Length: 112
Image (cartoon, rainbow, N blue to C red; front, side, top):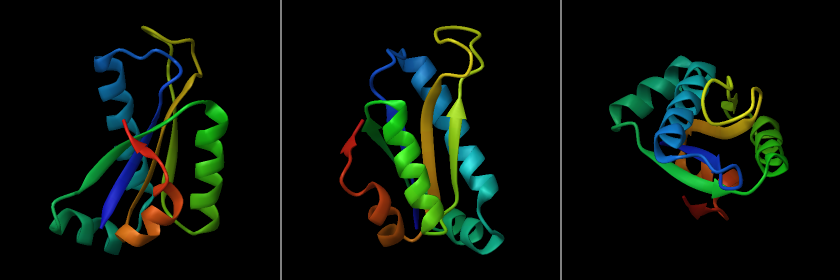
């Protein structure tokens, strides 16, 4: 079991902003998952991986693929209080789910 968080590399987020957006994505997708998946994931240590993608379109394509495969997922849009314009898409989380199901969506991406 794991969760993959994909963050955009093309919007110039600072390290703190990136950390916040990854945290938002993780929690939002967790809330989208069923009780069995969240329980199993929590019991296994809540494994996460942070991956990189350039561009909003890439995140939406991945989210569509996750949705078609029945995986919990969440897109994060920034509130615009600090570094980014309001509504900027910053990250996507997929899972928690079995590793192979997550890899079927995000397995070709590089680590952030």
